[in-house]
Amino acid sequence: MIRIAPISEVEPQAVEHLLDRAFGTDRHERTAYRIRQGMPAIPRLSFAALENGALVGTIQCWPILFDGDDGQDVPMVMLGPVAVEPARQRDGIGRDLMLYALNAAVASGEAGALMLIGDPEYYGRFFGFTADRTAGWRAPGPVEQRRLLAMGDSVPDGAGMLAPRTVALA
Ligand SMILES: CC(C)(COP(=O)(O)OP(=O)(O)OC[C@H]1O[C@@H](n2cnc3c(N)ncnc32)[C@H](O)[C@@H]1OP(=O)(O)O)[C@@H](O)C(=O)NCCC(=O)NCCS
Image (cartoon, rainbow, N blue to C red; front, side):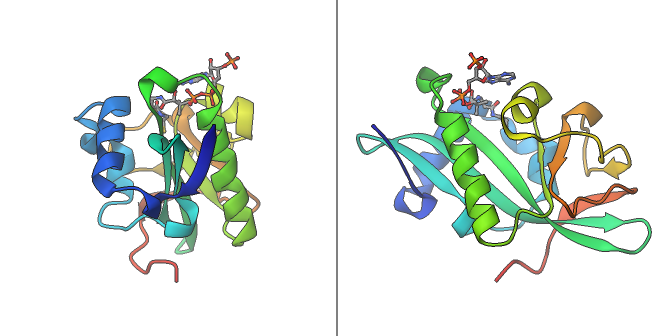
């Protein structure tokens, strides 16, 4: 049976090893890592999936900022990485983790401007993320525009740069 717990229940090293297995050890070069560089994950929006006590999945969320070219800064939450142990993929664990984090974001009032970099075939189909508003967005690294996804009533739709939010959420 899968239990979803706060990520603080597991060793940080175990999370890092799972991420290496799911994404490869070169994952730190990814643009998503640059967008939230130097920021701690948001503890109340970061979870572990445990199966009989063993870590089989994780999701972490990060405080970022949309630095609008019009001078308007929009605080946003970046979801991911979502990672499931390769041997346990396609069994609903990724979906459970995403829904858990999304519900937590709603409960804490942080679901107004969510974004992630990922496959629209997964994040659109199951959760409703779209690239409809992200055409003008820039990131500190290469990103396929179709994979720059967002959801929420306060998602900015102008031009601007994604960056770490240096004043973390309380
Ligand atoms: C992507 C990932 C988180 C999905 O979690 P999961 O537990 O394996 O998947 P789920 O059981 O929640 O969902 C399975 C469904 O999603 C589909 N799916 C999974 N990954 C997909 C992708 N990248 N694109 C399109 N569909 C995908 C499956 O085909 C399956 O569809 P079906 O029910 O019609 O057969 C997981 O496979 C993983 O860790 N992958 C490697 C790391 C990664 O790419 N993370 C996401 C980027 S942030």
